[in-house]
Every structure is written in structure tokens, then in C-alpha cells.
Length: 239
Image 1 (tube, one colour):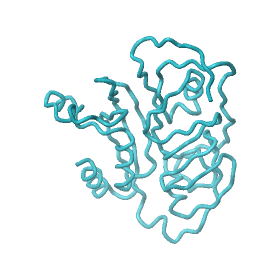
Image 2: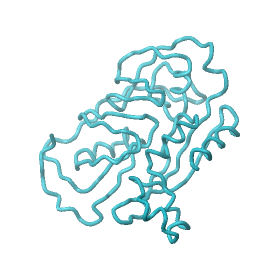
Image 3: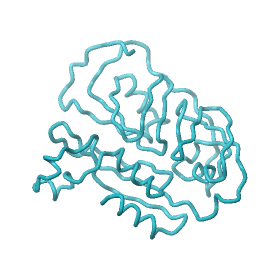
């Protein structure tokens, strides 16, 4: 059902247009006993897609430059966390990517490495050549300021490289926090070797939580507290 809705929205949207949706997603797959519970139908819980599936569905429909504008934990049932999100996406203008030559771009960060929505891989500070279509995608507002050399958009701010953001020294404390990458990248890596697949909940320690709350990272992530109560907070070493 969602695939058909996303496809129809993409079809009727004008080229160059923007799509915005606020909806309820889940941090994992919703089991059948909740899907078929009529008491949950009116609360948007039974039909909630996992966040990764929601974002993947928008990409398959054709939307690019997906970004998470809002992330607000809403409700938890039997260990499944439901989240209110607002997402933005764009429909590339017809023909703009065709006939244009290759473009050299430099990924400016903040991630040490990232994969865009077309599957291209980038390392921070490394120059690489992309085709015209990719350059158009990297010029969308979702990627704004992250690439030097991408097709510019109106009112673009100057591109400045970002320095690595490293965790504090000392042991980790596990407090039940999980991070979800909300886009626009399909996958991203921080400077401490953690890889974040888009839309998948990844458990993070106290040090990584502080890193992802840094202004360079915060716009890309939602942080979820799965512990529900005060976690023990025992110190441990990360491997």
C-alpha cells in the first residue's frame, strides 16, 4: 500500500518539487499481533512501517535528497518504539541530469565516509568524479553544504570542510541509547569507526551519544532511549 502511495505522490509532483510528510514509523518491524489489533488501527500503530522501510520506499518511488526534519519518540509497546517523524524529499527536474558532463566533487563531511542514494561512495576530503545526474542529486538541499563542486542551488552557503569529531577518552557507559540515521545518505561512518545504515537502530554508548549530539552530526540523527528506566550505567570498554 505504501509503495503505491509514494509512487502516486511522485507521479503528480511537478519536476523540481518538494515532498513533505509527517507520519509514525517504528524502530523495528511491527509483529502481526499488533498489525491485526483493531484497537491500534486508529492510533497509526498497526500500520507503522520500520523507519528504514519508509525511507527505502520513498527512494524507490524516485524521491532524492531525503532528510529527517523532525524526530520525536511517541510511544512504546512491548519493546517496539514508535516515532513521529517529518521527512522531506525532492523530485529531480526532468532532463537536467541528461547531457551534462562529469563533475568533480569533494565530500566535506562531517562523516569520514558516506554512501549517497545512488550508491556512490565518498571519503571525506577525497576528490572524485560523478556524472551529471549524481551532481544534481548532490546539489539538492538535503546534501547542501556537504560537497564542493556539486551543482549549486539558490542561496547555497559556502562549503567549508569539517574537522573530525572524536569521542572523549575513557570507558564507555551503556545507557540504552540507540541512534537512527535519517538521511540523506544510505550509510555513513563516524571518525571512531561506527557505521550507521540509514533508518536502522544502532546501540551507542555514552561517548558516541555525545559525538552524535555535536552540531555537525545532530541534524542527521534521531536518538532513542530503549531502556525506558534509569539504566545501570556500568563502565565498559568498546571493541
